[in-house]
Length: 210
Ligand SMILES: [Zn+2]
Image (cartoon, rainbow, N blue to C red; front, side, top):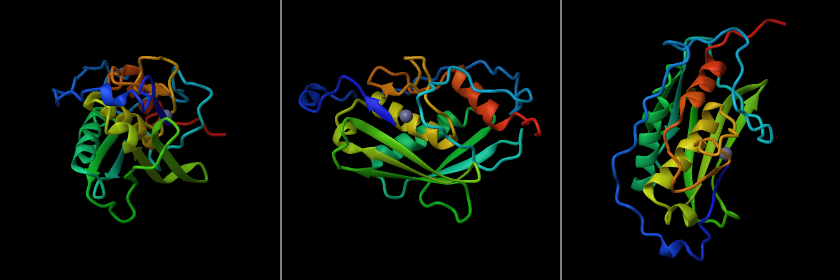
């Protein structure tokens, strides 16, 4: 879940959406020195313990994953955000995120849908489907009642956030992180080194056998 803070519906008309500027590209330091490889038993950092767990897609440690995001039902503005966010998450050596019109059969894929329904202040949701601790499906819902009034930066941050959940990331404690429970128009939509480290911890670490 991402909660857009400081944008009550009553005042959102005062926001003038900014024109699409260049997406900030924050180069990130690769903590593993390249590749989708983490130390055995590596765990995620800066985890918000209050968040509900996420689960990894089926993977072989160190080989990375391909996850599709279905954009066929989206208005162009939101399909564009998914496309941009897929490119951003694909900076991870563990993740190839691909925006696609329709989920390929049998592939790791999250649907992405918009709704005009009221959302009690939530601007996005990601709901995973798990089997035996492995993610087998995912559905992202974007609430346009709030996002239509958000800046491109703020809306992109929400899309990046929900796609982060879809990939297996939970909330961060760091208030500036795009994976914090709350994002707003000033949130940097580009994940930081910790987010990418966490993906490597999920998909690049050989789990100790028990
Ligand atoms: Zn969230």
